[in-house]
Length: 76
Image (cartoon, rainbow, N blue to C red; front, side, top):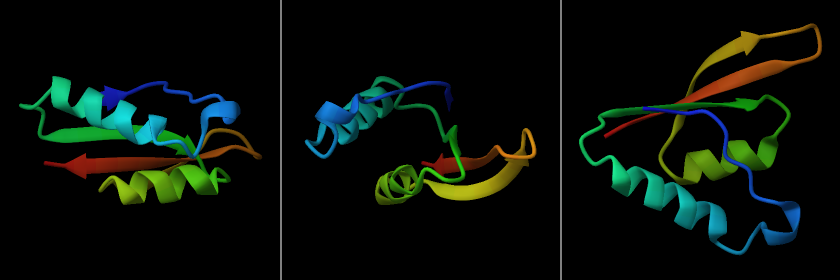
């Protein structure tokens, strides 16, 4: 399963909504063994968030000279 886009407005961050959303999404697909997503390399809070949820950085993709994405993956 690949999570393409999920945004939590800054007014609602650090309230558990992102964690609840990710847990809900993962519960909807209990038979999926590999879950992936991309996040910008400078989005440090995202990196910590996905680490907390059990995702690991597995790849870096340079899209432009200024934009690099990190691929995170979680194996269940």
